[in-house]
Length: 424
Image (tube, rainbow, N blue to C red; front, top):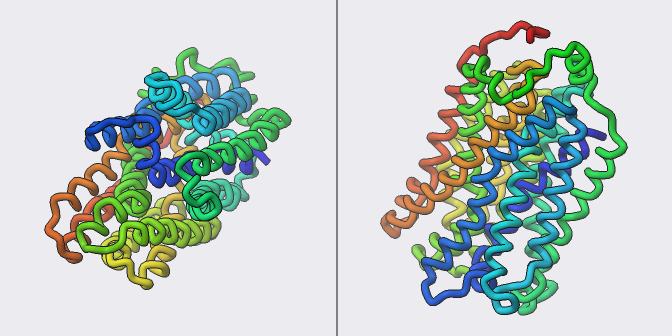
């Protein structure tokens, strides 16, 4: 059940990515109304970025709690924070109702959400895996990680359904339901965690009295393994953010106008592709346990990443062209991404000893969360300045993905440094 709770809460991170990217124009008009479209866009995406900027702080805060005072306590607190912040956004009055207080409160809620996700990302997985028998960990890990992709599928499907259900009222009230619905998985996860148990590995380590007073300062002893974590995770993070993760914004806002295609059709098409990609990713993540068993942990990154390297420009070409062929390609890309991404939590947990594991895994992961969205900005810049031809746009739109796949392969090729288990 610990893995299920992590699947639910961590999934809200990717649920939020799809929801916010698809609602960005609505947020601009409701919370940042101004005559300057540029300023409104900057303020809107600034609120989005705020969540990511504070995530390393959440990693340090909840990592300290998780390593010093127990995993379960930290997971209860971070899941409550994520759920309440999302609910707050869903019921937040707009600028027309409370004026400047609306955007200020939106930034505040996004910050609180970022703190919670910063603790959950990586840390929740540590708690769940430490409770799982070693032989079952690859399979439980795949199930747990699939929550991120299920969240992408549900966010895309719910957005399409609620948009159709509310029609013209979607801009006024329909979008709010997308955030209110997000409270349900957070609440269920919270109940599981309140009734859950502490990590036996952490309890054993705590009973020895060898938990460092400040886990953050202790991770310097494992800097090389932290570098491996950052390289692999950064590659996968940039691949998502610089590619299909932002097609819901990129296709209707930039690509469709450049190619003379319908922006409304591009918006719907991008969400449909997100659904296909998410289904593929779920399949890949569920199969990742078998992949680890067959090829070992490090090869489980290299093989699917090589596939991502090849498929990135092909999938981008057909997606930008709004071709029916983009659907199976998005599924395939999602499948490969799921196979490459799911083993991260399993591998990263093995790179660090129990007493600093939450802090190290969560901090490395969330440092990349700050950098990751720059992949979206890089892709946005590249396609914006690209000539108005499908071939040129494809090259520009897939460049970040190609570089990112190479980074994963490079990180997985590095031999991690062993540490003495049980050492202070």
